[in-house]
Amino acid sequence: MAKESKSTKKPQKSTPTAVKVYLVTYNALSAIGWAYVLTLLLIHLFDVDGKSGSYTPAPKSTAGFFSRILPFLDSKTGAVQSNLPPWLKPIHTRATTSYSRAGAATAFVQSFAALEVLHAALGWVRSPVPTTAMQVASRLFLVWGIMAQFTGVRTNALFASMVFAWSFTEVIRYTFYALNLLGCNPPSLLWLRYTTFYLLYPLGAGSEAFLMYFTLPDAAPVTFAHSIPTLTGAWSLGDYGRAILFIIWWPGLYFMYTYMISQRRKVLGPVKPPKNKSS
Image 1 (tube, one colour):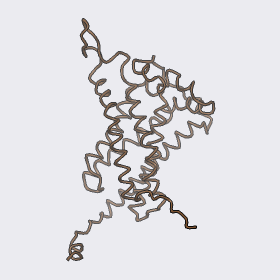
Image 2: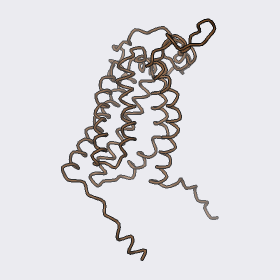
Image 3: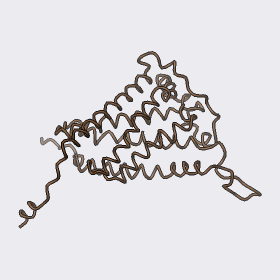
Image 4: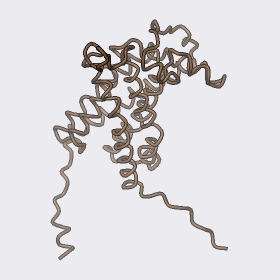
């Protein structure tokens, strides 16, 4: 009876040829787009073409309230630069101008990810719509709601670390999806798909959070009127919204990080301890 019950399972529907061709094309072009962004960023950081010095940062604003709390993360205070080893200082300096060179390309390529919500909604991919929508929306918020709106954070080196994590991850992910649709599953690519997040996800998500953090106003979030704390006139609703996002970003990072670890175990299996050789 057990064998018969297994045979009664409904076979998975095959993807229509036209949809499959479209998805392969979409993933291949996305991989190429992110590879271009990654190459552009690395060329700039290491001054491969000798043109990195021609990109000047936007005018720097004065260090604000939250910049004074965490000066070691704010490129404008100079605290980061002074504590770096000599070989890393020029790379950090070029990272502060990386938006001028890679910002437009990053926003352009990332914007096409909005199509992934449509893919999930139409059932072309097995990704859940709410999760896909949240992930895409958070990225779009960073490129259009943070970097495009607040010129002060464009000179923060965290933009370079965020884009590096995004682009490296996406080159692997989109290449994996494109080849998978073609029936090709290289073991090395599978391993990279479910392993590189250990470093790249905290790097990317942490950079995202602190870029939001440094958009907060110079003034303290709470003012005092006749010794009574009040929120009136301190920050705008948008400022409070970004502060709340900064706070909830961290439990979200933990949830997604542990979820990806569990997914890795399902796909690759638990890490096996080395076998002891018999004498």
